[in-house]
Image 1 (spheres, rainbow, N blue to C red):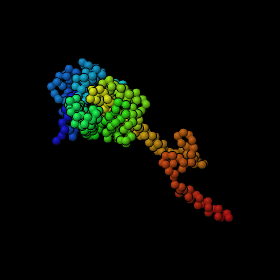
Image 2: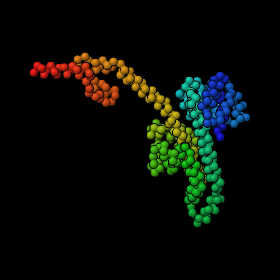
Image 3: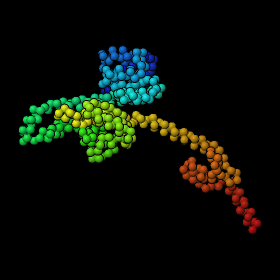
Image 4: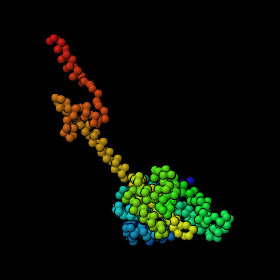
Length: 370
């Protein structure tokens, strides 16, 4: 049975909306796609109030709203629905700002293709569902902690022969809180790090090991900010410091190995309702940034190949006396060296039929004279 995806396209140009609908339906063979269309922000709010939507495809330039404000107004009301920007407003600064604010992707109308568009929409739905699963799991963990009240601590304190209060809390968290937390974190595609009040990492899931390219025992005990390159460490410090102000902030940071991650910090609260560390969650953005670079490298390589083929396809400018060949820079080379530069190997030695006849005649005449 095909998975059903509900898409809301917010676009004032109906003809362009029809084009996008046709483009998506042609490429989404494995999904049951239903696309609804509204032409302005007011119609968008009215539609969302009465319908369930999996993802919003949003144009920033609408009759009743323009620019970044268009996204912020929708995201502020339905932050649980992923939003992919599709607009003619081609600004890298605006794109980066909106991704920081929570947009799942930012596409230019002039560049969009059917394969890219449907892949971006489906990935946005998948990422948002994973984030929602993680958020609910974390809420369940917080509920477990709240259920354990002071009265329960005192009772267990007596049962354990007056074992210290702090030790009881550690035992409780190891048996109940940590097991649930670790079970969830090991099954998702996000980096999960647990950082203590000294800024040292006390836990890392398997995704973190792969992303950091470090063994588990190397990660544990290392400083949180040491994972990032020099330019990103200041923002990493802000994430850590804001946790102790009971604030959860999100930043796009670069790891020391060059990978790009969207990182957020969630305060970890102890039994006295005080911040005692943070839970760091990171989502990999590296592939989104590498697509353009790979395309440019391929384009450059094709141009180089084209240039070499053009040079080889023309007649070789050779000296009629010594048979050296002149390259495109005006420098003269032996024919073997010239071909080696293009083909990576030397040409085999050979004599053409005319030269062979001439050399044979010359040899016979030489014998006659002797």
